[in-house]
Amino acid sequence: MVEASDWMSHLDDSPLDNSNPFQTPLWDFAIPEPNFQYGMLNKLGDSNPRIINPYVMKWATVQKQTIVQQLEAGVRFFDLRIACKPSDDTHTLYFAYGLYTTVTVEETFKDVAQWLTQHPKEVIILACSSFNGLDNDDHQNFIAQLNHQLFPGKLCPNTVTPTLQLCLDEKYQVILSYDHDAALNNPSLWPKIDQWWANKTSACQVMKYLDNRLQSSGRDSKFFVAGLNLTEDAEYVVGHPFSSLREITLQAHPALMGWVKRQHCGQGNTCINIIAADFVGKNDFVKLVYQLNWKKWVG
Image 1 (cartoon, rainbow, N blue to C red):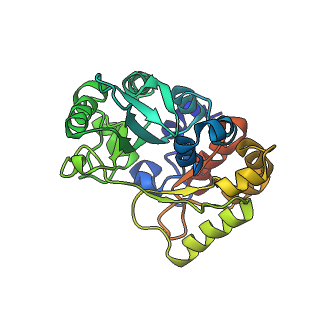
Image 2 (cartoon, rainbow, N blue to C red):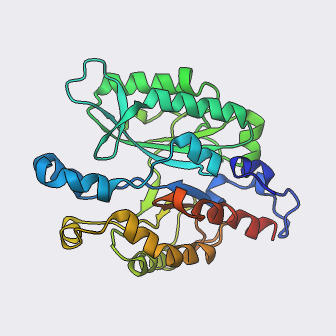
Image 3 (cartoon, helix red, strand yellow):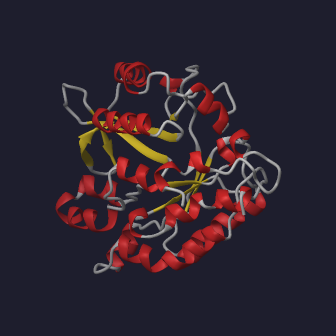
């Protein structure tokens, strides 16, 4: 039985279709992502904290597991919003999804680096974005820290095609997307990864949006995220005061997981790559996604 914590290293090297998964670019893999989305409540919460904040934890909190726990569960892509708190003279970096995390970016990435050392054949993708409150010096210091302290030798350069075999041979374990001009012309950092969000409140609408995108324009040749998240807006929240994002997402779970089971990975325009969903610790989503790789290569 394949352990979720090491699923990449257990892909069969004798596949059914005569292609080798270890020689396949990672953008042709099926990769699960936990999704952090806070929607319009963030902006409303800034201006009307007494009115909106009681709703924030109810409607905005979609993940409670730590990153390391999610890595152990098989997650290999993380959408990370980085921020510096206003008037913080220490310029400490936190994750910010409408609310600041109590754990720092440095602490979390040190835990991730330790996990990678313990799982030398696994590769992860970190997509850093937002960067609220960071100035140019903050960016340069953070990029230097990523390269030389947190993930020395582990960052896969954007000048190569990242097959699993190449990453294993060169000991690359992190593909790091840095969505800011400070990363331009830096070979160790990848550009922004395309993300498809339906911004709808029903599973049917979300699945229709993704199917239409795949059938019409299709994917490009590199990484992209298909988001299965249901997105609340202020009108929906006000109209459903006794509900929560968790409740509506879990109600939609059977339909959304059915969509995952119908997908396939590979090089075709309609093939998926990274699939994002909320509340990944509450269901079998992660396993369903990474097992799509077995459907292609092992059967």
